Amino acid sequence: MGERVQQPQPQEPYDLGGEPFAADCRARIAFEVLANRWDSVVVHVLGESGPKRPRELRARIGGISPKVLNEALRRLEYNGLVERRRYAEAPPRVDYSLTEAGTALLAPIRALGAWAAAHADAVLAAQNRHTR
Image (cartoon, rainbow, N blue to C red; front, top):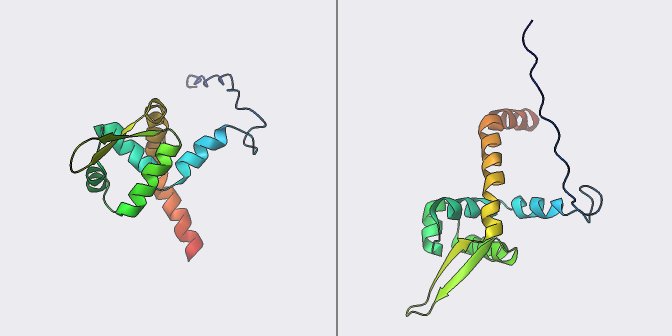
């Protein structure tokens, strides 16, 4: 017989406050932050290439309107994941960069990307089965 594979030991759970995934659970903050289609894309792009102006972000992301990008940047700034820097120049210039919290979100976003690469075909096949 083959060798037994040792299963990873469960880690001590974080104190998330309240009942897990209940209305007062802090983990819901992460799900809310990642729930928007574009927010994690903006965080990923800023994480891979550093501070960017809105026009550079739009060019790098592709398929996002100026209005939707602006909404995403405001939401990310509101959530403390992105910092907006204004320059006292004429014409006015701004750029966006990740905060410490935004940078810490890169690892979970990359993990979700790896999951999607491994399982996207199965998810799309399941969706196709249900839309026939």
